[in-house]
Length: 264
Ligand code: CDP
Image (cartoon, rainbow, N blue to C red; front, side):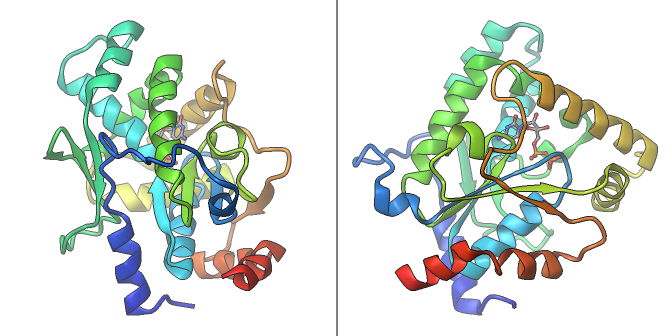
């Protein structure tokens, strides 16, 4: 099931996104390109980024993890000492920051992509518990969402893309022909995140991660603007107890992929 070396390279080349300035002269997501847009949503640490990246590699599609954009804005707010309750200031900052997502460029530290904030490499700085603690409040602001959703739609106009987040199937790309909503038991999600994070933040316990995840899911699911929920036509995939390879195999049996194969 592993993607070929060539397909990985093409996928990484496709990841060279100048989010701040990229503009599609065609202006709209046309009916041909929309056929190759896959939307993946789900709660924290449900495995959606792992699956999204594997699927993108397999199909030689671009992989766009929208969570890193909300995290980058949150880091910018924290670094600049802006009061996170000051919605207007947070929105102003969101509109002014330059965000780039680039291939890892040979960095062998486990990164899936490199995130730049105003030219600075912040790939790992956005994965701290401090960002986890603040990101959902900032993501709930309407102006923040409007700005980042515009950037996301602009990027997806190219087609051949797997876009991962919380509101992709419902708000960002409701036209996507395949929408997946990835879930897993709360305990398994917290365990996966603890494994991922324990080398970077040694003092963080499983219980702290579990509590933060439950809190974030509650805020993300109950906010006024674009709450996290499956689109009506989303396929729900429960990944509890399954390996990433098993999940990908299950997803690839969906009818969508037969139709996509025929149209390529
Ligand atoms: O990796 P994890 O699932 O923990 O989170 P993430 O995908 O990096 O997203 C971090 C936070 O960004 C979420 O808890 C949401 O508050 C926010 N987010 C959002 O509101 N909408 C998205 N499309 C993606 C992320």
